[in-house]
Image 1 (cartoon, protein in one colour):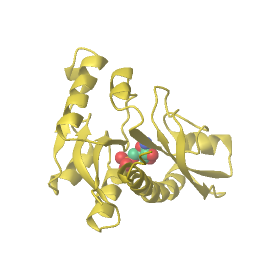
Image 2 (cartoon, rainbow, N blue to C red):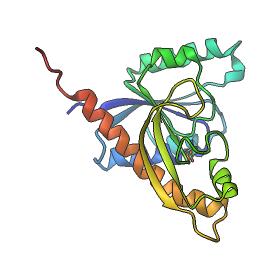
Image 3 (cartoon, rainbow, N blue to C red):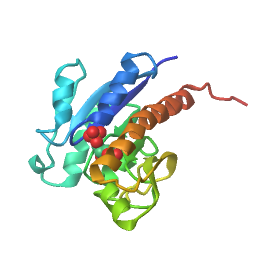
Image 4 (cartoon, helix red, strand yellow):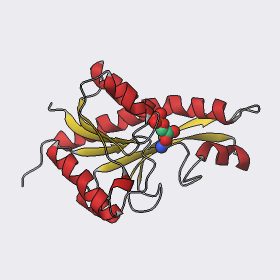
Amino acid sequence: MKPIRLGIMVSGRGSNMEAILKEIDSGNLAAEVGVVISDNPTAGALNILAETKVPTLVAERSAFRDKESFEKVLIGVMIEYRVELVVLAGYMRLLGPTFIQAFSGRIINIHPSLLPAFPGLNAQRQALDYGVKVAGCTVHFVNEQMDGGRIIAQAVVPVLPNDDVDALSARILKEEHRLLPQVIGWIGEVVKMPQHTH
Ligand code: GRF
């Protein structure tokens, strides 16, 4: 089966990106990374990528006149690298209509809460402050609402009595690293399935 080609977008640490690369390397995920784009020149993800041969690009929003011209460049890069699925792995910027329309139905995101609860920043902090007894992560399609598109898969973890943000985040992150590559694998299988002709 031909591997699905990914375009990964990051802003920070890059542990979800690293989990995807590991699953590919170990032969558990039939995918290949066409390109990684970071909107942050100091993202930890870039250090991880420096040890690999994955094509990497830094594109800062501030270098562009407006969001549309920024996103047109992102689209151009994704097309150049023949990307089939865009994976937001800790990409901290809301995508605009220009990008979303160009890759409609082919953008997924990982978020560290059980959506629709706790969208936006500091989801684990929000969960602790609210006092929920279970938390988790969500992989979903991306639309123009923050953390708002159709849910593909979720994983649940308990919130334990003495949890702080770090402890809860670590428990959720372990599930993120499992769930995101798994969903990419599912999508890859669907995309490569032969089409019925009637
Ligand atoms: C993760 O918690 C992810 O769910 C959220 O941002 C964080 C990114 O972490 N969207 P990393 O950069 O993948 O380590």
